[in-house]
Image (cartoon, rainbow, N blue to C red; front, side):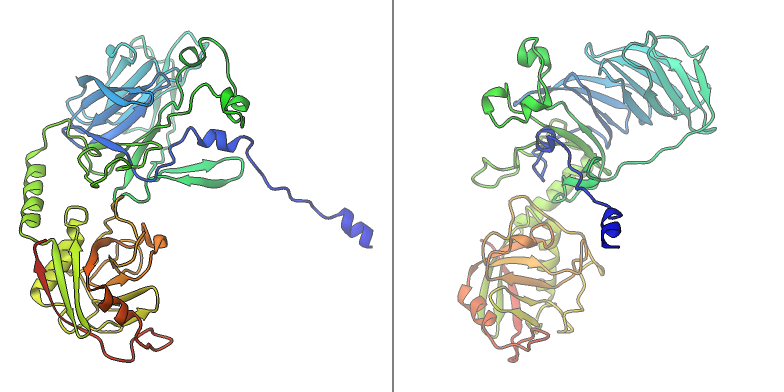
Length: 459
């Protein structure tokens, strides 16, 4: 019986992708974008070709060509006014030589020669195109282009170099699914192996991956390479290190974002942000108004605060340039006297002290806007040192009025709690509060400790 039972046992093996590390080297590992560039309007599409071109398109019908320079970033190449209205879809063929764009409103499809930055064909259709896709293979004589009908659901297949009078074929069905997350999925192990952009306060809706290494001709002067060579431990076998680049556009944003292996601000000693977001276009009027409002908010000296407590004074430096909405919420509450009398309702020894709840139970409090507001994560703000001032929350984008001060490094909070300040004076007061006896279950101090008032100051 035991022998038969053993014979019937099923042995499960752990699936693994051979040379997985080599494949991942061609995908950016940085969680924050390195740089961003602008259009005049909201960007709707980003595409990358196998010959190192990047195409970006905006809702005003404008198209831009960019060239990836390996280990040097990207450079602008050409600008087209492609459609009178926004793009419905953009497609690139498997060689990267041809690109097609379509617009539902003007009922046109345009075909471009990517390498020469030139439009080579245009279809004026009698239906409204919704999606386009090249469906030909390398050996095909005809560059077949599939175009879907936004109203009927039909799919028309045309010759990209011909005309629209004689479609090659017409299908009667259509389906589509939008991409809203940036995740690297291993199809062999059925697992997500990398997540990109989680630390950014953006909703990425379109992504494209650039070629990580130069062409075989450029890299090996005609010689061939393989995954085995790239995965070898001997660095002498590798002709060049990959330069991965992922291009993304975000919801209601007129910028496109470059993810690489470079961490933003890695070489910026002062933590400045001017090199990350490039102003290659003149800002729109509303953007300029917003910038003036933010500058006025900063100039109004909301750069520091003094928290007067029953145990002493805590001086805080604020970051309105990096977390403007969070600082505005804190300073407005402070100016209105909202925090006056609030108790430090939760103390975890050797970790943090928390306050900002008018109920004193840890379940109350609201923002100056009446509800929760979104997180503001900045790449240069991390819980890598003690005495960081951060927002307490009940999950993503649930900030209200409660905040806490750490007394130790707490890197596990990065990407979860918004840092908006740093204690610069009164460390002993924070430590004194953190060492008081507390109730074991709730963490509430046995001795009442509260905020008397908060004053704002210029630093």
